[in-house]
Length: 111
Image (cartoon, rainbow, N blue to C red):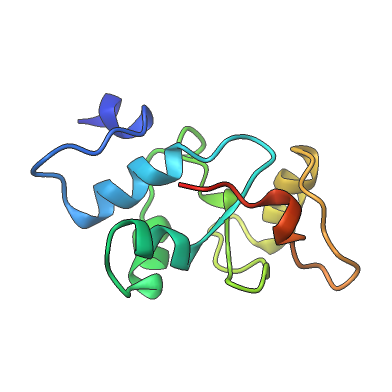
């Protein structure tokens, strides 16, 4: 199952967490999605549940949870700390506004 998750494949029988990790694995370098985007793709209203799943991500950095941001582009919830999340995103070319939030119109990836 690990190989499928890292390849971004969702298979029958996967747990919610595994589906979240598989979708997250699809986010390309230099792009972001929101917790809500992942929840909607999974046909649920659980943006917080998505955050909880990413907090348990055993596949980082192959499953790049640093590429998931708040609905307003805010950098939230990263086990490595928000400074590390900011560093990873800017290294990948993600543009941040002066207020520290991601410029979503330029960086959003559609799942």
